Image (cartoon, rainbow, N blue to C red; front, side, top):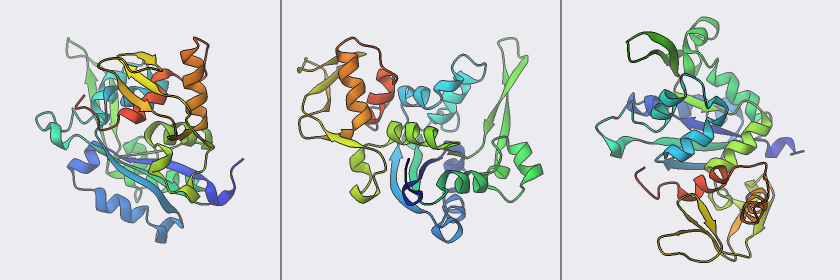
Length: 244
């Protein structure tokens, strides 16, 4: 179990917040003055479909999943401006990080947020109806400005999905790391330990990686089952590599 000082949570400032110039407001609400938490990592991310689908993996198969991916990848709010499709990802660290950020973010549903906690960040969000090909409403999508990890184990999974160890200062790395001793390449959806023409190097000997990622890559290369998916491991290494 992590010490209280090392507790971490992931925060994403989503495309709707960026489009509406709410970045400064969100950061002021999440400041050390209000939370007592420190920023351990920050990056601007062009969200690929792979990253978006892994982040929202629990919602696969739900009626709103396709729209949710269009939302987090920025295609909904910046359909004609690919250069503006981005989110800002943060790791916040400190005692009760998950609970503190969730409290400031407010309820997931913006309507409930406005009713139950009108001063929270998500009270400024909106709901968007989802329609089928016959224009019938079949659900709704919540454009709620930010993402905040719900539980400690979810925070670990999400931080490892969005951040590599080197994105976080050594003294603030909360999860076990390991030096890689092999090469790992990706081409399409296949993993290699030797270079193949057209492949991308994920890790090389000497690179620092999350220990759990290396364990997953070794198991997958050996054709053995792994708790973590291939895409969940490699997505972070492809961040800002393409315009997907």
